[in-house]
Length: 226
Image (cartoon, rainbow, N blue to C red; front, side, top):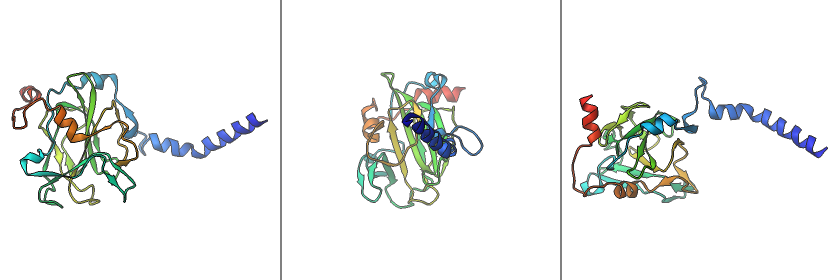
């Protein structure tokens, strides 16, 4: 009897929330929600090796960019730890609105769009390290973006512009690095890091060049020739 009651309760609960579950995975037009998208075998195979990583807005050493809110800083107002780095132009506030944002390394674009007003425009790029690990870089609150899913991008290629997430915040780039093979936008604050990496530390560790080295990405030259 208890088993039957349990099954009835489960069925009733699932029926009651079935529309919520559907909305979670399907958008209004019926297409898949990119927040729950796992990369296909083709996308994994198409992700190029990244021999070098650079900061998406220039390094702090350039005296043009500063990190306004660092990775995993506790934000009491948001009740969580910051999941990325907030990179700002040195002038602060909206002085960097429209400034270029560059791909941190060679990679494959796996998401480009606006998942919610609070995120604004978001670009996510998949990278393969020299050890074969799949990482993703995420660029959020963009004013605009110049790439689309499936595009191969080279390190230093402009992918968008610094924005305000539809006026939700002063202009800045919310930059994340993740160890992931799925497109999971998540939230900007969390209780556990899960697959989030310290963005600027990861870029520094994978730079594979001296701090003052300036050189174009080999992929950029290949893409230009084609």
